[in-house]
Image 1 (cartoon, rainbow, N blue to C red):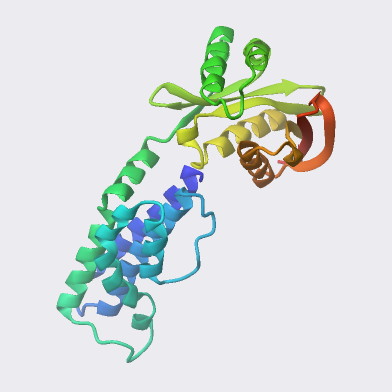
Image 2: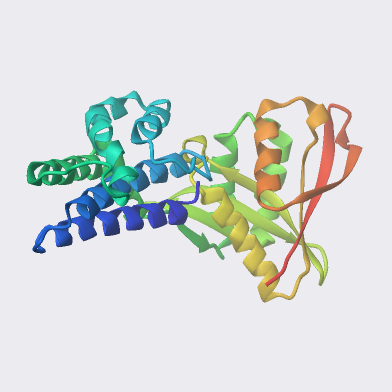
Length: 289
């Protein structure tokens, strides 16, 4: 999922914890509100992690136990904060209503400690640091650098690009195309090349992203670069060709789902555009400011 969106969840989580810490110094101490903010902080950290793992709309619940369980399906180390979630989950609803629960001074301090424990949980800290060192998308002008990036990335993705002649063709084609690459610590980990057809239309000619970077919003940002190119050049349509579902490929099933999520609509299938075993699905997205 897109790191910018994850960052929004984490920013709100930090704000809730900061509010709880600020309120701790007030007199009389608003115990219920402090504990509520502690629960909210934990809830938003967990939901931010789920967004990172591709759950774009996390469930609208205040059940930290349930959210922790969902996170554990991706990484069982979340068991380390299970106790903290169990204690804080009760503060998500009850403190907002009169006579629902009595909260003591030690309860408040425990709630803050557990909220800090969740914020300091290893995987969440790692993700937070990654957000701060966000993947950079840059336009590449040098033709040889374009070709080298294209060649290396495509050869690392045999499930999508397994035909040698096609790889060689792409490596040559991208030299003269608008080209955007994603970098992690100055190492290219993905790219997209744009083919200009006419004054109205451009095409996502070829795009590749190393598998370990999938489902982190990087592909969405690279498509965004293509859309920005269209906007800057007053183009109305962005198209893409991909394998149709009749081609029976699990990898390309995910590719089609990605393009659909980006707003591309299927227009037509060309059974022989490539060959009989690889029917071509033609998709298009209308570009608006």
